[in-house]
Image 1 (cartoon, helix red, strand yellow):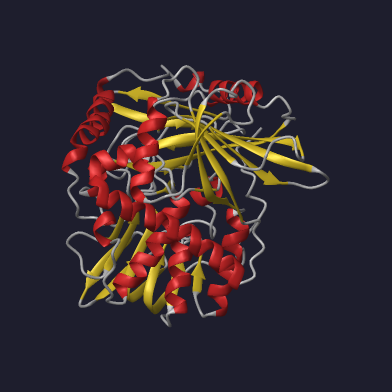
Image 2: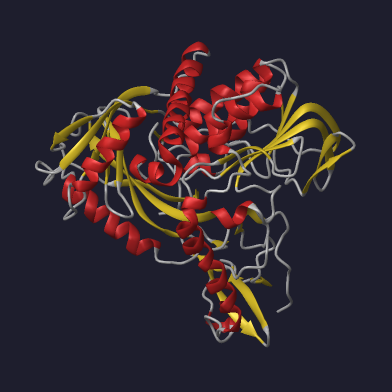
Length: 501
């Protein structure tokens, strides 16, 4: 079964064409996921002319690979956030994320967007064999920031009747691409222009304007928002403070009413998460995710799906067949908040970077924050997400995540994964050593070889093959390349260097 999410049947502006020639606007938005489209929406509603540009199709990136859990609380636990950022920042973080959920609810209602939005309870439950004290610590932290919470025992999952639980009222969920389709339509009605399949190769401030250059065109704007999660604007400074992780999701068929409609996630590390999505003919879908790992540090998706399915069927015996399976990449920051606001050292370029597992709420609140800053307004969330902040309390996270780069670069002196190209089967990729060079080798279904440098074009880290998604992953900062060497996920903007057979 290929990697296809439950949401991908929904196309958004498939008629959007490539940028050719010159274009001008008040604000150029790079990236058309929930961060980019929400930013375009907020700005056009405030009377600004906006262009949205994407390297691929509109909304075809990581937003299409989410599990669509709208959580106003920290994905890495509020107790952990409070340790790193303090009580006041924790409160502002919660308020900003809750405001994002409120904003989605408001927009889908006011714009009549049919996207299955609903409020429902969320349950954080004690992981198997784990101590209950984490529930007590989290209860205290959540109460301190002012979020509604109730301590319980038991959730409606098999074997979890005596697990310690926190119930969070007014969590939410929706169909993310149906929502973005509606947002994009409103944006288009308000004059927003969209360009797809137009990779931005350079973002530069010159003479009081921002210039965005592509292979066949150029946009000049008063301001730019780089809403690509892994930014293409900042090359080094912020990338020491983020780390890419890959997460896996299965969708199962289930009879309607077999599982109470709620959001469930446990305290294991990595944690598991469960939610429902409406289907048809008295059948729904159950989404189950987890088995996260550092990007590029494992190539065993099949094993992870087996473990995930086993975990799910043990807890939810009514599950039917697997209907979809996919993976996505999140960009964790060392202090659990995104980097949103003016680019360090810049004046007219703004970033929306680092989802920390909460890309949907980060994207929407980031749009609200960046819009205010572009319009010259102050904002209470500014310091929480400031890209130039120095989270000293997160030093241990900084050191742990950055050891990956040193370990990765050391791979250049290691042997290749295969000794010769003859070992490659059709559809496979692997690393081959040829003299001093490491080669990213891929053989397509027709038997044709595609050889490229195994060095990521961002800062030169060693790439790894991802057999499930059929791509080359960079473990350092999350760049992803297609088998033909073209970049398909930031921060890389340049293609891999081709090599001869």
